[in-house]
Image (cartoon, rainbow, N blue to C red):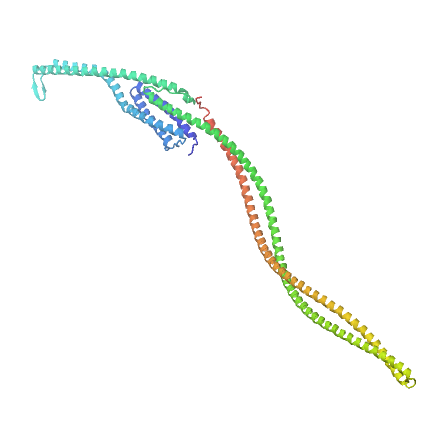
Length: 520
């Protein structure tokens, strides 16, 4: 609910006090004056009472150009005051209703006093006129003699005297009653006037804003009014207290809000600078991400080429392995042949040894033949020549076999070395083939890794592009945020200015009720 106190409500409450004073003044004039003055006072009294009720109901329910009072305590007191005023309206309606009769009573009493003597004098003249007249006259068309007329006149006179006596007695009784009522009315008026004067005296300082006054509630005519006025004063006290408290709270809240607004403005400026720096950083990051995206695209191309090269290297390694396997087979065949050559050279060595043995035996035989020829003398001289030739042939054969033996040994040694070398070469070829196979496997792994690396680089390139795009959007958003922050800073300054105006209005509101004096 809105608990704001409107200055117009304070004005209406003050005006209610003025209407109360006017109502009491009109009531005093109604009781003390007569004639037109009392009638005018009664008319004003009724109109002021109606206006007081309309304003009171407007303050409670709203309407008639009066804003409703929404403060809970004040609204509750207004409701109680309205209920009390209903009974007061009934009494005032009776006063207004009886005011014309009061005026008539006052005028009738004065008329009776003025016309009683004139009526008696007119009756005496009429009687004298009939006594002195001697002529006949007609009554209802009947001629009457003097005696008859005299008798009738006496009868009429008696009746007139009786009527006058009755009327005079009734008039006197009415005069006595009127006098008594007048005295009672004057006494009541005096008491009412005293009560009104007492009420006005008690409420005299109220017009100066003194809300410490308290009207005395008595059994007089002003009792209900005093009670209503006390409720109105109590409502005004609550209203003024609420205004003072509210203005104090508003001033404190405005001061705190002003400090918050100033801090918000400073924070907005700092945030604007930070956002500007962050925007610059994001822009640089977007540019860096563009460069990274371009480099990752180049890296993806290089990775694809690496995959191709690794695949080609794998093919070459596989061909190398195949060639090394072929070389291994050839080396193994050559090794077998060299082994067979070694075996053949061994056989040649055996044959050479055999030939060497034959040469030795031949040499021995030649020596024996030479000895026999020498023993035979001239007969054995030809045989000696043959034996000598056989000996030389045996020596030559022995020398040749020695040379062949040397060559065979050399061939055997070379063959053995060749076999050993071929075996080592075969082992190395086998090892090289294994290494080549491992290299092929490594190249296959490199090919797979290169392919995966190419995929990762491609994904990184796409992610870098997305990040670059997001960075661009973030940069755009940061620019918008920077603009919004600038607007927020401007709004904070405007808010601070509005808060300053609100503080001045709260001060003015407090000053507007500063003239009221509340009880301690």
